[in-house]
Image (tube, rainbow, N blue to C red; front, side, top):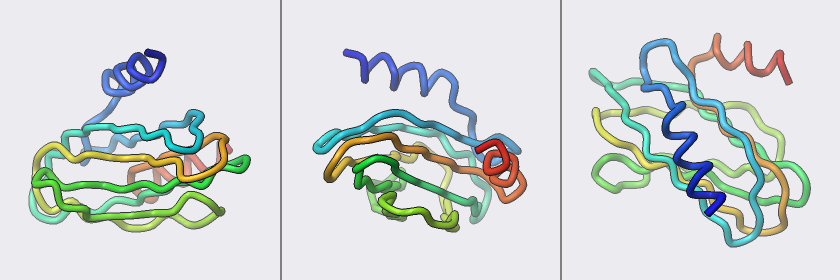
Length: 125
């Protein structure tokens, strides 16, 4: 029940991309847990953004992004510190973001936005 409430709150606070808004979410996750976020992307042509997924503690988690047609378009491992990667949104529609806890437990952080927004978030960490 907690996860359903948390996901509902995340969806209410979510901003559409593109348009100068970013997505930043964090929380706890353990082995076998999955979090799904459905995010409406209004894209004209190919829209690129930076994506970053990290995990702390013993958590090994991955981020997968699926197109409105159900095709996996992006995967990122969150088991080690890394730099943001580019992801391209080719179509307008609802994209599904899936965070999967493969082993261990701990906290995760998800960021999706442009380079300037990433620098603001990174400076707050």
